[in-house]
Image (tube, one colour):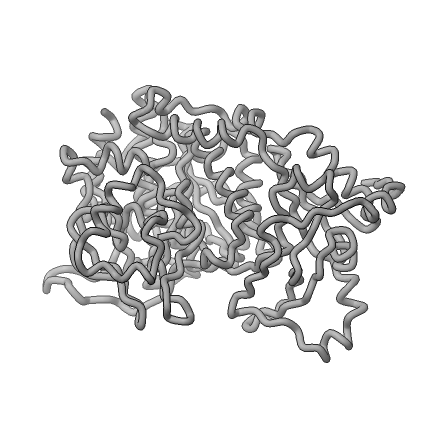
Length: 537
């Protein structure tokens, strides 16, 4: 791609604007700055190293976006279920042409920049440029940090960044300059758990035990799926699946023999336990549903959620109706402007009738390092996804009554540990221990909320299939439906209520499970037959 560099000096001497939310760099405990001696030895080579940045252009019609999200998602609205196509959503929210033009003029003024990708909705522009150019043209102070475990070096600006006066108004944020790659998988290999089981009860979690536990019948599972109905898992951090492992899992548990379609890389010779679990169990509950793996390259300098969104944009209306995601990070290390940018994308997916379910993390909101508060996780804390107390988000209206009722009960921890006005999670739960997973030709025992998420996702895909075959729309964003239609007195048996236990993580106290909604298990675990009845009303 050819660039005209005649604008260099114009941009260099034009007024700049410091970007909001970018002036504070929160460094996670797993990262440390390189030593001064290391910097002195290699400063010249470091300045010439290239980094990947993604400029997020602002959407048009953001007020319309938020209002439409609520209207099409809320069963009380006359517009409930009136979803738009992905193409329509993209057209209505595309950046202003003047904003795009100003950005490209600015990028053309940077001598060593290379534009490597532009998203389908025209709102994410990814570039490669030198560290020196980032410092010069974005008024940054890029500093190398090393990951303590891997030794990998990342450049981040310790003094924020700025953009030219006529470019800044059109930019929401720039990815890759002021936050670190802290996303993690949410499962672990484990020994078998026997606590609480009767003498004749098996400790193993298998497809058949899940069907029994959640009241799923063979008739529910033996559907002839509607061709356009799809379910999907996200695969981040170099997690791949093995077709041989999936086939062995399906044969062992007498399941339908299907293989997913993979968008993105997949090294079948290096199957990961997370990807193996996710694909095996979403296809075990969502049997016969066309399934997709959205695989993101293992580039730790990038934000996998950003790349995942770009991949979904490229799929248009072929994008799956239900998405299961088993990754997340501590909320406070994801800057507010990054959260807001991706929240708009979650809203766009909801307006197009898509459901996004995200694992909540094994401890929910974990204890902070200084032991004084809970630390919520993101994006499970986002009010625009279904999760399974945020400090960044105010509580959404759909859960006001449920959360207020829970917080009025005894034994809830002191409010010094959490934001009582924040978004509460999880919304629903599922069993999360002793999952039998086929990985690399052998059975592994696995625990974690990421085991629960694909199980529920498969159930929602089945409900969508039943609705579509009756001429109804897919469920889309679930939370309004869950809180306003499912979790009401008339449908008291839609969930198996979990009333015992808590998520204490010493030395912080835990939230207790109680009758009805609680912030350990949400509304409880699903009763599929009752959910099916409600979904088809």
